[in-house]
Amino acid sequence: MRRVAQFLQKAPWIVGIARSFWRIGQPKFTAGAVGVVLNAQNQVLLVEHVFHPYTPWGLPGGWVDRHENPSETIARELREELELTVEVDSLLLVEVDFGNHLDFAFLCRATGPIGNLSNELLDYRWYDMDALPKLRRFNAQAINIALKQMSQKESIGSI
Image (tube, rainbow, N blue to C red; front, side, top):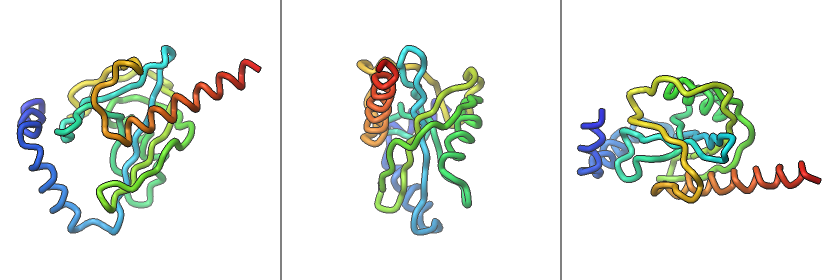
């Protein structure tokens, strides 16, 4: 899969063409969900995606299935892609992207360890907030909102 990712990074336009053909048979809107998973050191979990040639590193997540709640999607995707079980906490951000795609971002708490990675992922890492790689704007916004939310909870808890 690394060879596929390297090829797509050299010719990222292929993903754009494939996305255009894929959308022909899709409903008016497609949807995806990502999870902002923070550890005890306030590091964020990022994964290296095979099929994201422009920004390979990003939040874990995937497509919302028909009749599936996006909060269920993120729990399912983390289980499928990382063998990671999570509790989905709160909705952080919703945005329309690519003209007809809804993105949902959720704050998640890991309830177990990371296991084997799916074929869609090359790697995972816990990143310090001051050392994040280049991310899609949506991912960066979701992380920032999660950090603000967490710091508000901590300041309320210390009162």
